[in-house]
Amino acid sequence: MSQITNHLPTKELQALDSAHHMHPFTEDAALAKKGARIITRGKGVWLTDSEGQQILDGMAGLWCVNVGYGRKDIAEVAARQTEELCYYNTFFQTSHVPAIALAAKIAELAPGDLNHVFFAGSGSEANDTNIRLVRRYWQAKGKPWRRTIIARWNGYHGSTLGGGSLGGMKPIHAHGGTIDGVAHIGQPYWWAEGGDMPEDDFGLMKAQELEAKILEVGPDNVAAFIGEPIQGAGGVIVPPKTYWTEIQRICDKYGILLIADEVITGFGRTGDWFGSQTFGIKPHIMTIAKGLSSGYAPIGGSIICDEVYNTIANSGDDFNHGYTYSGHPVAAAVALKNLEIMQDEKIVDHVKNVAHSYLKERWDALTDHPLVGEAKLVGLMGSIALTPNKAKRAPFASKPGTVGFRTRERCFANNLIMRHVGDRMIIAPPLVITPAEIDVLIERATKSLDESYAGLKSEGLLKAA
Ligand code: PXG
Image (tube, rainbow, N blue to C red; front, side):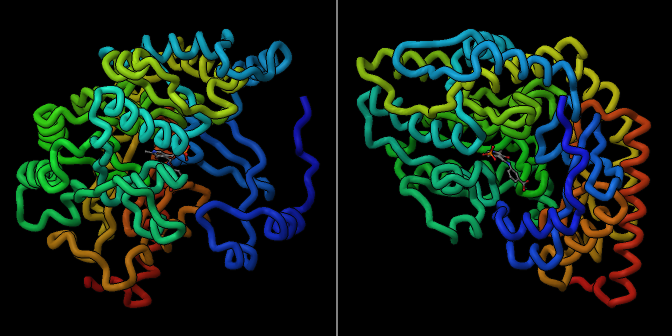
């Protein structure tokens, strides 16, 4: 197999990169001055860069490489499928074996009557599909006016125009606008916003914002509510335990479709197959991507319950929607192999009973660090809040994200990929991470926190807002 190991020197690669490659969510001119870090290889939880550094990937790529990098068994399936049937579409009354087998496997793994899969190429595309699905459902029910979708501020559902509109990230809305028929409610972020309120009361209060929004929009105008079981890109915000039960109650009361965006939380990340199971959510539709193929091929989709599927399928009309690569055979074969590996190697069990248990104690102990105010960990999805004053759960006086960014830079220098979202640090390592590798993660995280703290202290940046 060909491997690009004799690549150009790093500086030349960086120059070509900035000359021709425009990066997502990046100020390219600023990156051009610095040069991107260039990743050349991956194995297990480890990445190698063009300078030969070994980096522990605490983010599984972008929350996706769940079975770890460099699996030969997946590579072989991709090669075989490419040769056998590299592409065919699933439009025009045709189908193919990989799409059929993958849809059946997903239906087997998904809870309840989530028995039908519409494939997309990514999580963003799948959420765009969901917008059409729920609106088409209500049309077919004879209520075309039910089209508003309620979502949350600081939720993330992708960066296509539809996905970005569902998401509650104002900087994304600011670049290109939003679609109509989407309304947002607050997020259940107790640590930053809960004040003196007990966490469970705060969870209820935030869920009840949904009811207030439904009444404001008019119950008969609302099509669906969408939320991530745990907000990922928003900073690994774990909701209070009262939150999802109340959201479910309100959706049931008003007959509103519930979409669980499981792009990050699906396929083992939370220690169950789906985050909805961890939180007792019974969605009508789940968005999936990322861990579906462990990032080995781009694929996403919507898992749809019997009622929504039957209503649309029996409406007497086509569902006028689909992508060239819906159910792409190579991506589907890769995803199927990935799910087989998840099952054969009992990776969800490993998350729950080995990796989570081992990491939990060490992760929680980070709250002993002077910079860390709280630590959250569900399965292998974790966050810590950085603060200058733990007792007050205070934000820093500096611009939000300054301290987080500086801490992330220390992690980068120490060959650990741990991200920051504002002044929260987040991790989501490959699910196959071993206890010995968790020790390295904690050791590098602690060193990075120490260095960040020392720097902030010497520059007088430990002030509360
Ligand atoms: N839903 C959720 C919950 C996601 O996390 C998407 C949808 C969109 O998926 P695609 O495949 O279209 O990217 C995501 C993606 C970050 C970050 O900064 C997170 C995502 C994507 C890019 C950056 O944490 N999540």
